Length: 167
Image (cartoon, rainbow, N blue to C red; front, side, top):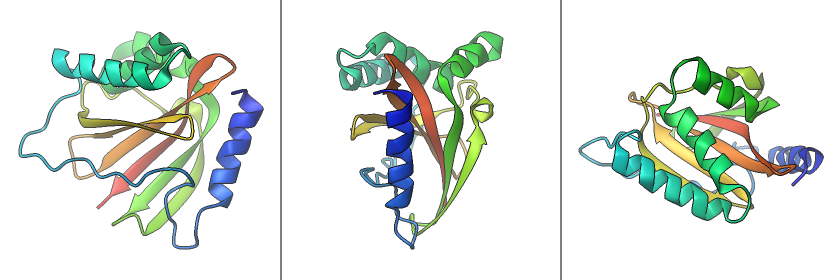
């Protein structure tokens, strides 16, 4: 998918949102499993599980690039992770603030530089794909859940949107 086509898909998704602020068109409304214990994304078994799921969804489209970008966001820290993320994010991203049971949503355009590594502070990761877009959703350790999307643009995986799910 080229950058122009990806931006057009994003604009179409935003245009298709309902007045009540439903999730973007084609995106599943998923809820992370409620578990008594948090599973940190950066534990070796979880790193392998997440990498396998992301690589499987990426298919033949540069799976190593997709898994590295997901890893750097979830588990990265420091300047090297920051540089890897900035190299893999679009110049501007759409950020969705979703309140309650996803019945109210505020969309903001942010610079790509607003995406940072989570410094190993990501738990209960869910990986999903809709309309050729990989969604990575996680808990940041507080009441909020977050996600970011990976979109294959001009032979490279890019972060194109982020979301915050607020109770």
